[in-house]
Length: 369
Length: 259
Image (cartoon, rainbow over all chains, first blue to last red; front, side):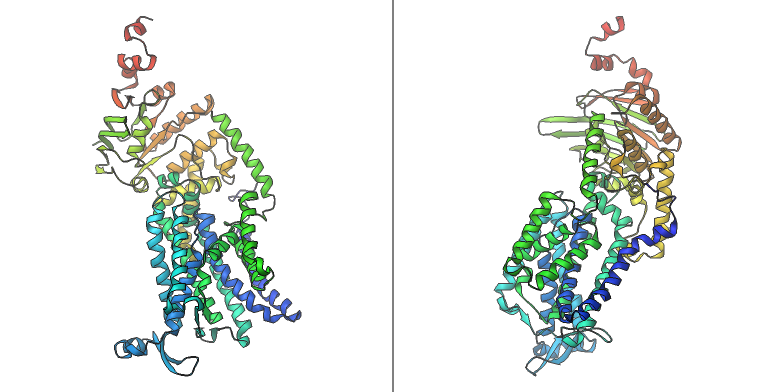
């Protein structure tokens, strides 16, 4: 085994960037293949799968590093998407007199709705920030009490939260009830870069989603190999020992949960603008369970693999390859992984390594006795 | 002023009084040992001092500051570090990373700094790595830095746990039965190491069953029996204390003296 103290510094620095390079190359390569195969229109589903992968990557961080499971990430996704959808489609014209100043600071903007009438709505950027704030506040309300305890309380709390959010969205006419919200405008994300589902912007949006996912992955990679990542892994491995090393375990668990929730909400915001709408099924428990299954299928702690597996499977799902068995496929996947390879499949030699580890720990325990 | 002052500590678990009104001081630079038969309340007392348990009554002052009721991470930050009876290394990390975790309470990079790899964070990370290597050298295990923690022998895990505790820059180190499960040569190494730790200026509070180690190392020994303090003094005094002999051997003190 090579020691980190002796191996070549150039190689050790470059090695962690290989997956990033792989992603950066894969995006244009996929585009090229689809173009040559004459199925460039499939980039739409691929783009959507990439946005969903942001949710799953955030969940992988929470599950693989802090050892906490959230069954409410669909709800956080929906909170982000719905907040953004409501604010950018609701007509605030009635309150024009009192809200005029918001127009001056570009939080409100006048535009035409689908039917050509003039309405006053929140700009997508401001709506995005509001969506993140909503997700973080909701995350605090659930996470703060649940994460002060050791154990699976967060799982329970987020499951309940997800069910409540889903019911509220279906039952509220303000959010379009079972129809959801349509007519969400496109988002001028940066000058010249527009989040929109228009077919003319398909390629551009595919690369925007890819860049966003790559940025998220790089930032998370930096986080997990640093002080914060070590603290999270320590909490996962032994909360008592982590606490004794000066790690504020409750605060770290809450922070990583909020980060993860904010990533889900961000993906919700982007996808809502991309598809120009959002429906209540996004908040459903089945969606949340799907995210957990995908994170587990990717091996949780390896965020690159989590993202890749998530894109692949969600793409198949969005193309309708699983037909009416869609949810069943993800349920079966979860069952198989938990019962056969709880540390994640696709690990070269993973099964053997675990066998070896099990043997070495049991023998050292004999030595202690 | 004593470094650690425990006053009248009491802790009950249901009807069982695990620690019953125990008071003691630990002077700076001392190696102090806490002994007593199984179930005497040694580990409970330890957990009261390090914040894992909250005392029902009494107080703990560290460097003059009352720390009872503080969370363990805050106590660790204040300069009081500990090891566990069963070495509790983080098994998903390698040996070096385990020790690097010990630097957590002396470093500051948070999510943003780490995610963006800001210059301050990179410098800090470099210092953390250096300090961790230094502590591994101190316990003589630097050659195992890249090994997964789960691949170590029991004795090596204990040493790594010590290095990790030292990485927190403690004023005082609490060792919970560090010699248990070690073989004779490992015990000798451990004894030397504890002495070297004291020579670095770290005060040591030791819970231990191995009497030759306790008597060889300690400046002062505190004896607990059924949660109460029955004797305190130098190793020589304790060895000749009639009540201690009675508690440990179960016989009448006169018999022992005669035999």
